[in-house]
Image (cartoon, rainbow, N blue to C red; front, side):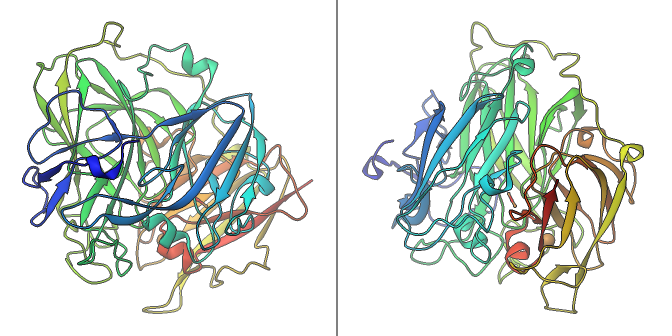
Length: 490
Ligand code: C2O
Ligand code: CU
């Protein structure tokens, strides 16, 4: 990592977003853009990687030059400026991760989407005090895919995420390695975490809003990246507090979804738009084989015209639920096409990995969670009960295959997430489950008035005392009590 002093000031003038004020600066991380750079854009920062059986993360206050003027105070892992290193794990290996808290407040570190014992999960119960180190150890049982880590301390998840605490986890396995897919990290296989922030006059990150005004791709404002003229893989994470994205390219081109939250699909699915709620990940293949060197294309989020209930569809531009990005189509990433690499992928694989998903017929028990509220201005809850550390809300028998239905109320959309398992979505009350959503999932968007059902097997890990969580992944809703906990018992 380079020092902050090396940051280069540029003027924000590119893109079709609503960036109207201030300068932005080039990032002081790994520069994925080999070219000279487009005026008004900054090279997309690519997080460094960590691998091996013994890993160490440390969370500390930091700062990053995100705009003209003062650097923005942030939280970052391992001496970075914002966000953290990407953990590269291999299915079947056992890892130990030492997580040290150099903040002046408590934190936790949750391995989102990773199947492990509840006591290693890093949820609200595994508190890491200032100065302390927490050392979970677990076997990597997940399929190759894109997961992530982030703080999960009840009532402070939103604040710590807002300051930039988080990181990717990429799991590799033999089935994925056997496929002709792009997998050169940072070259044709990019992690891409999307979020946005509002800034106070002193450039600190505003805590008065749940929607940012300025998009950050890997913590980079107005990001651009040079990608080779071949098939490229984007591992996208929506790490917003509340905003959802409806992603697509400005030229309307088709791209392919190859992976969902919990691993690769059975075959690529062609789409032109991709809805992503907070916490969700999708792996995409984008075909750049026919592009001229020097051409550019823009990934955008088509949030203009989204109805109320779609997070970010609101029309307010200021206030707690306002944002300059609300109800607009805004730029996410500019891609500049560069020369192909010698071993690049030039064809779309016809099939990916063999998956056998659970169906409704497999389930031997069913539960329903209703998303409720107590009237205007009150927090959302499950079945009228806010999160309570001392209450176990559900108890599941080890190895049970269950169908859970999340039934939303009439107020707003939500992003439901459950720990421990990867599930199959078996129905949506509003219509068919889209093909690209028919993979292993741990998080999904649920619309106003919609009921979504999924089936999961709660295998491997039981404990009479250590609970797993389920919650809305909109951190403001989670912190407000839209969270419950469950035990898996033998
Ligand atoms: Cu990404 Cu319970 O969290
Ligand atoms: Cu919610």
